[in-house]
Length: 447
Ligand SMILES: Nc1nc2c(ncn2[C@@H]2O[C@H](COP(=O)(O)OP(=O)(O)OP(=O)(O)O)[C@@H](O)[C@H]2O)c(=O)[nH]1
Ligand SMILES: [Mg+2]
Image (tube, rainbow, N blue to C red; front, side, top):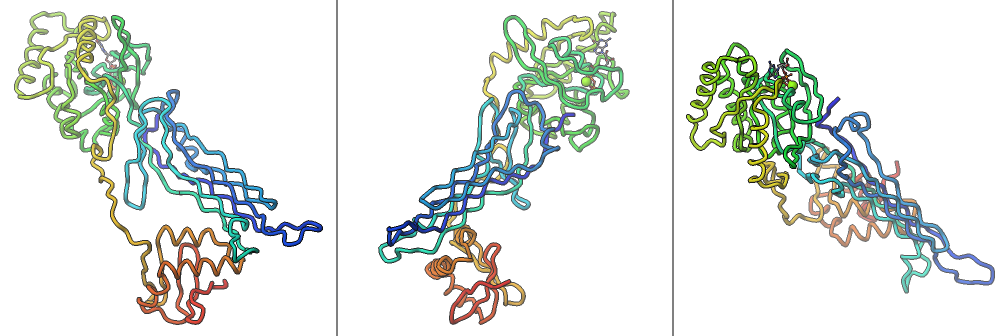
């Protein structure tokens, strides 16, 4: 089965907790703190692999979690950092990060072995040895490890080929592919034989190029009819198109009409697609033995192409038979010739080309406060405050005091009072909830 779009969940590893420990040895007074730091949580990378051709595996396994960092230990032993997780994806996969309804393009991995850091592992928590200062010689405080990044991502495969074959169903696209490459796609005398894209490598006169055959297109394909536009994305990155036209027409329409219809669908789908160089091949000519009839068919197609100004369609029509092999050499010669003139680099997706929004770096306040439940619940959100909370071990008195101090220094306390917080109101930061008391502000809620 060919799967070209999936949603997966990635969760990088949490950092290991710092350790709270003191040196205790016979005859060594004032041993001092010796709790080591926790190790870093594993990162998650996506790596393009040339042997993968579909995203099918991801529909069976949609969750990926990297390992947690090791906890720190006494005796100043640091926790070991966790191994990073590398997830293989096919070349040509575009990666989007999903955030609510937002979809942000992160990367487009085209060449084999390219990699991108998608989710960062959390930092290890500091052990109590790190908290020793001149004044506090016996700190009873150790941080918890920082949680790793976690979110959904979407993977979208856009095949990478030099030449895309398009045309109505039953036109002979798969037959052509099997003629010029070693690929053996299904071929049959009914429409929609091909249900997913096929790739093949063509070697011709010492040159080689990749050909992609996609399911047939029909009128209103751009509106989702037939197999629709789902597969057009696979020819978006081809360097040129070959339009295969059945000399006998399709759906009771003559060859020229089908040519016009399909080109219109391409234009409706994307401007980029119609602006690609296109060769037109009139197929199944082994069935048309009458020279006059052949000439007429070609003439009609030519006149339709010439009607369109500024079109990227080659004026020269190629008469071929994918079954007998007639005219194929001439067509391949011209494909090589065209490809030579076209840039060889694969067209990569960027946020701009994807029409997505460009990332803007705006000044953002360190935290925001939102009032809920008729003004009795105050939600403080912000990366920094949430991180401090997540890394605090609330079983340690000193740690609680420290985080409250940090919040105070950041001005959270004052900001809450400004927003009208009252005694016994609730304050929520990340996953933690506090009851607010004026005498000892932000006291942890015992639940
Ligand atoms: N006589 C003759 N028959 C052909 C030629 N090319 C293809 N055919 C036949 O046309 C039918 C359709 O061919 P396919 O290659 O499956 O067509 P397709 O364009 O891939 O069709 P879909 O996958 O359905 O879009 C098959 O029965 C082929 O044998 C040709 O040059 N001459
Ligand atoms: Mg086919």
